[in-house]
Length: 172
Image (cartoon, rainbow, N blue to C red; front, side):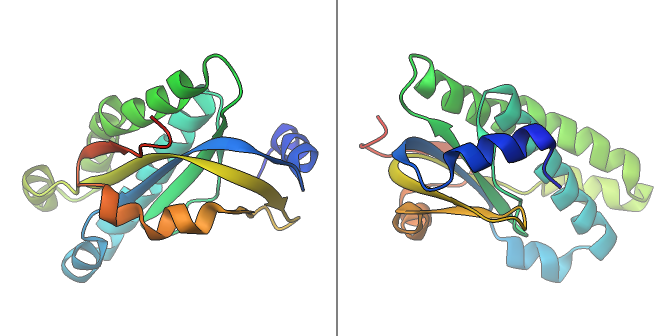
């Protein structure tokens, strides 16, 4: 559920066109993780990943979309002096220190016999930074999307590699 502050920000952006940095993360081989993993453990991992992604984005002045299963995305206003620094810091925070926190929290919430496998086979993430021309479209259900966003998301895995931060030429 979005906070009242987030609702006000999102409603203020509704229908406006601007350039935004897009940060997109996706769990590598999530189908395999779902098929082979304990449902409780996998659900806990997804929930923790979602929370730490939201934290990374919000602390770095971005707007996060609701996490959708195996990944999420956020946008950062590209017009400010610190725009690229903000998206870069959010991506770096999520991929490095926050993954340590996700794993630490996960290991405290799963059965001891599952811990060794999670440590050995900890999932990898795709992570992409792109620059998109975006028309913000917010609805009261709390979901938002942007026209112009879909082409970036379609090409996501062609550019991104597991556990590496990919930056498109346009964003660079």
